Image: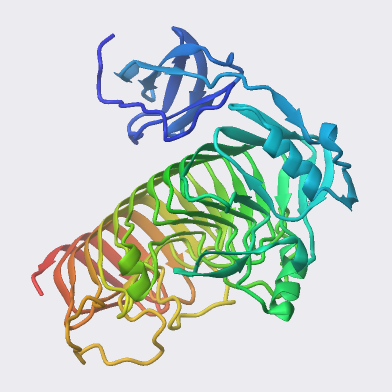
Length: 506
């Protein structure tokens, strides 16, 4: 078969006993894609991903994709990819270990017994019902599957979440365990952990947030916190109401999130907000490498996705970079878009956000690293994205400064952009950031905000085919190399500023 332009790949860890996920970079002159399995047409999709379901465990499959143009003719053909499903390690239903799904019985011990007894490549199944639980701890080479109608409901009692030491807001510190964790009693790395299924994970965050703060013995837990794992796969699950960041993945390599739904501001219907909660990020890959997020819906109270790598001196000492992150064909329904930072002290590089839609979201893109972080953020691309924010709940402040923004003064309310400080290892550097084919409209924020440090200017910032409307127009400070091609900025009084081909060296 002729290979013509489409390059398909299996994202990291994105294989189960019965499914294989594929991704590719889609072209906007291709109307749809035909996905073939063993030479037979499996599905037609318009996105740049497809999950092939209903496969046999431990079986090899041949997969390829054809691009179809508007006339129905094949215009591109992919490479042929061979992949095998995971072997069948058996099913371990939590009810067989004493769990009761009545919403009142505490099932922590029963669920943990199922996990501990799970064989290699086995699946711990949570069936239909509401299963109340405290913290559970997963292990290598297993899947946790929530079936249709299943709810894993977090206990509201802080004593059900043992205090452990792990990273929170960029610093290793005492934290309440999350609802779903990996084991803490080993220094070894974990591998091949999957959390999947059409059920829901409800972390009881409103009540637990208040209870953990009242007790005050440690930092808040999360709904899910997976650490030190090679091969993490989140598939199809709904996760909601976390007491802090919702899905936090730390020091892990090969992470995929496929068709997951996260709600940290509202319930699934988006008609009832969760009171009291703040700092409620959706998904945080933290000092992780080779991360793929595709076909997901995130409605967040804070950053929808935040790519992080540690804070200040400790983050630099740990020195684990966040790199090779790919976010495609996702939808965002509240919050502050896709962020890089602000905890970036281990460095961040090679991030792509493509073909995403932001609705009721304050910003499409934010790259933020204040003084103290140090290290380098580089090679960041946002492209083919649309966004709008018609609400007035938030306005530009030290925490968010525009619909599209890069900010080295993040978290500082008042500052002099011309007041330089000595360059040290705590001085951050942001370079090679591109915004391409972006449309963003806001009634309250700056349209575009770019602010480097006078002692460490932003380097090589490119805006190409960008249309941004906002209350503050465009602001730019301290940049070495700003390129604007076909950029339109619209102010509230409908003044339009067009930059056809502008290159500024400093």
